[in-house]
Image (cartoon, rainbow, N blue to C red; front, side, top):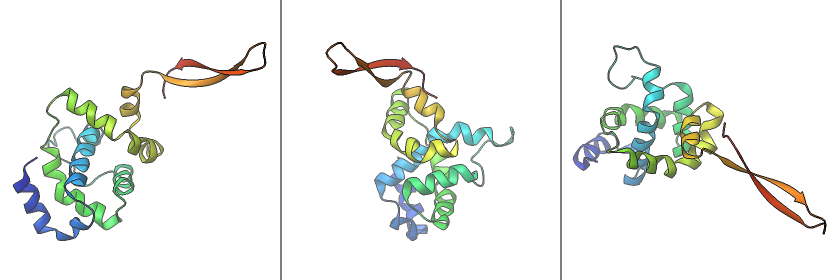
Length: 150
């Protein structure tokens, strides 16, 4: 991450410092990169850069993730969009690490907004569903079954 560009963004918008420390900016950029395909799908084919505004569901998702107001969410996108759009993952390992790192955010705030289903399912091909099987002694034992996620 280019620290000079980041410090310039934060010095131009000091109110962002109330929500974003360095680690939060890193998470924001990772989330934008994970959502880049979804954001690109909503754009016209000739538009190469980031969209001028986020879709409502992505905006609400990011607001929940960072516990920020509507104003701060819009300011964050206006401030970080070019930086985030032009800071891709270095490789698949880094991308998978970001998927794992932010899994809870997608489960807590994304699935209900139609965000992150592919991210969650790419991490888990199978989920374990507990079921109870009784044996002759009357004791219950959990049995684990594979089934597809989503």
